[in-house]
Image (cartoon, rainbow, N blue to C red; front, side, top):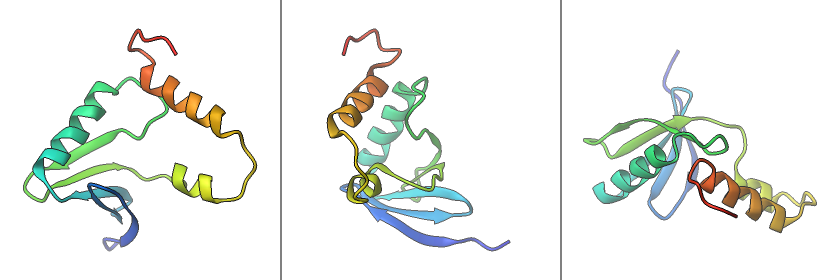
Length: 102
């Protein structure tokens, strides 16, 4: 099976593509890759985030599991939801297992 290389999105730190069934983020700078990997390690026990699986320092890439949706697409979808509930859920996800209070 060949390597799929489909553009998925663009962020402040670089582009994300689907490659071999994974979401692969290509960074512009080493510091951004290190920051994202470090954040993933810090949040490794959080249940509701996408966890980094591997990184390639030479190519400035970080691989993650691929999901069929994302927060940006949800927010633009027109589906009715309470944005404050989503914000609360994000904050709870970021603070779980951190002994923080939301």
